[in-house]
Length: 68
Image 1: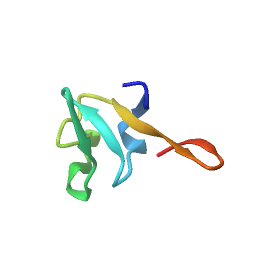
Image 2: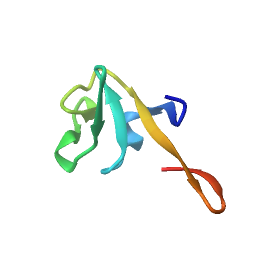
Image 3: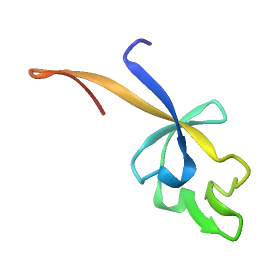
Image 4: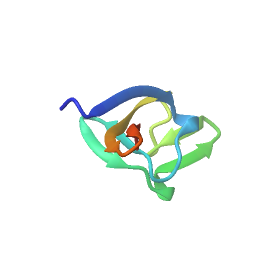
């Protein structure tokens, strides 16, 4: 699909509501997915991976194409 933009970001920069690709699945980040423990920031309890793939969608509007 050419209307999807994938970028790698740090787990600590994740926010609730973002769409990510995790273990081959497209997921929406929920409040319970994020944690900050003694091992640092973690997504779904996995503190070993420090980056994650964020997915944004190209959406055409009357002012041009924007990312959501």
